[in-house]
Image 1 (tube, rainbow, N blue to C red):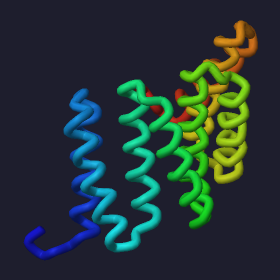
Image 2 (image 1 turned 135 degrees about the vertical axis):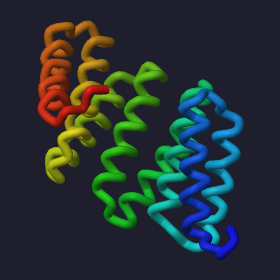
Image 3 (image 1 turned 90 degrees about the horizontal axis):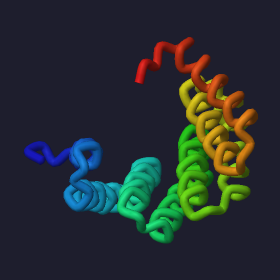
Length: 167
């Protein structure tokens, strides 16, 4: 703030928002992400806007506002597509899939997770591939396809072990 670095302020607010979200303080997290979004809109940082919308969507999702979460994730996806950010597109698709899964739309969720997986494979993002595979496994489990789910979970685990993602 002292040097009026608006980009830096927006990033810092986003980090604070993520920290608060991880601590379970959803109202505080939402406030920080909205502040970050406002600055990013002011300076025209489209990638930052997409990230802020996604973060807000995640908060809405965690507090049970599935309609609001889906809206924000779709807004984020539209911007990611506009700027051609494949990593962001894949993240948005997975976030949309998660919301659809919680809404009970398993077919829609599976489609989004598969779209995200294809992009993650295209760009070679192993962590993203593992996340997408795990998400697909979750949907398959929800559909009662336990063998298919187990296969996806095993694939995801193998990748995570291979890249040292202990979490």
